[in-house]
Image (cartoon, rainbow, N blue to C red):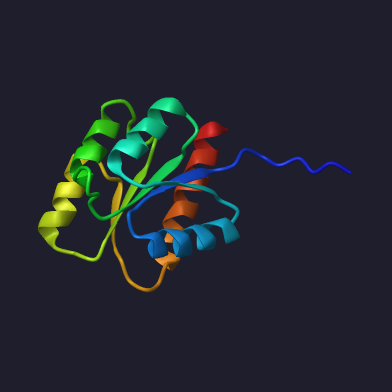
Length: 136
């Protein structure tokens, strides 16, 4: 018996925090998401260039050592719209100024990081459903 699976929703998690990446990836995989990692801004940009249409969503966790998050997001937005590639920015800082800067640079949403990963998983599910509707 062959099981035919539909297209997967592939998420790239960009974070230098290995614990955050691994916990979030586990929770997303439990919901049947395909997850890959990027260790820095340049690494993510390389993955996006090499695998142009493989990713359906990017989840950022804070700034990277190699480049600020707003710069990475701005560079992505030069070739991919918010609809084509949703970006979710996760930060421990919930200041209005930071939220404004990230959304202005091109992030779809900003989530304040807590020990609860449910809001992040729910947003991934939301964008997966939107992706399915747009593909239909």
